[in-house]
Image (tube, rainbow, N blue to C red; front, side, top):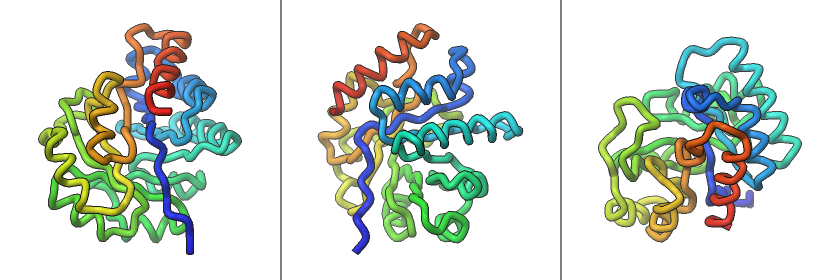
Length: 213
């Protein structure tokens, strides 16, 4: 039997827009996260793709591959296929069954936001599910209604798949989230320090790794 997929407890997401606002290179940030001990890393670009983003994603995929880190492409099944990457898709992206035809042998994650989507997601051909936003978040335009810790704990038993909690998760609330039964916390703005420099990012990553070790 194949070994069930286990998602690392710390799931950092590189959002290109947020990184640009902080004047941080996604590739540099990826290097700091990988060197800091991250075992999974997602590349998230929500604007129009150009050759620059594809080349950037390819460099990060190579970095992750060479370090034994799972590289996840957000939304784009076609690019995940070209890069030999894992894939994370949302409710408005290519449906999981269709995505599985594109990336047949790779890990696929699927976003859910409520009870109905979580139950349906449990039946999809994906290795893990995400649920959120758990808290108020500024990392997504027009976010879905907040789930909250109480509902997260109530919904967790509805799937045996690994569950990644996402949305507004910070150093000061991450352990509360994991105590509900979630397997992992996805962190977007929470990995970014107030100061836009590499040393501050290294310190923040070290704090996350120490907390979730």
